[in-house]
Image (cartoon, rainbow, N blue to C red):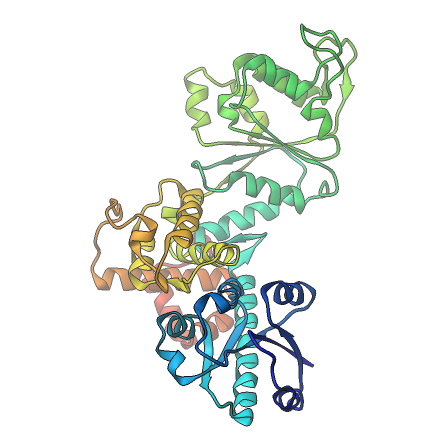
Length: 447
């Protein structure tokens, strides 16, 4: 049975409740914030009905406005006196957050029809969001672009083999997330995933953090300390910013990789370990090897399988998906009137180079959700309207051709180059798809 939550500052007539219930609704009522939040915690509602019987002072129903703004996934219908519609607060609530409204007196038959339509819309929204999330997400990461499809294939391969992995990519691209995903889909998933930043502490402390120490090994070592390598036994050790690892620790890490054993500081007994090592860096390790800053033998030990996490500027089409994902996430956590991004904001988002990558996009979206005062987030809320848009200007033909190629390539990758299925999804004939593939030089071996 469908569940309906009624919010009202006064008691609702039994006759109305009975008529709504007769239309296959299980009705719950709340007349204050505490009661409403209790019901929302205990049950799942897709539709809510707001009943205001008079143009009372705003403070008396402010709790209703706050709750409606917080429950963005619900569809809301409001019934109120006609004069109340002219009040700015209520007209904004109707325009921004309500599926429909009625003026008193209530037409019960029309109301039940409206509530039914609202429930249907809630189901459609839920299905659409789920399908969109499933189609845009792989391994818990969002992206449909060709470079992300390449990364996903690499993650799949890395999860299937138990060898050291080197992940490269700029700051903020999600290297740790990729490492964690490999671990979670590997045979070691039930064991620990341990993260250590090689640039976060002095050499002596990092040495103790990695290998551990015995009691009395140095001044202040009042008890035995188990290092992170030992703590990761059976699982995965993720060494972030490996390019910053000091030379003396490079020697010790190489020895551990070769012998599969460690020695705690101050200890004489070697300790066998069974750990899979994944490393990440935003620096050019090959150049570091040529410059003598990184050991060549260690580089080859770590680089058995290499994954590159692409920057956002190479992920055309993914930026908007990510922005919408972050908007939905943060909008559900805070009070906001924003329903999404304005067209201008999306244009700026798609043209900006995002030097800080996913981390910058996430932080700017979070701030925009908090700062936005209108129904849609504007470029100013993102603080991007005066920033350099590094991609420059392109003609409409160039933009259209780039978008066409991106869409076709992504569809072919998603369908594993099944021409019949891809042409169906793109709503073109097979011959047209073949011609477009030839036009844009799209082949299986360069996707």
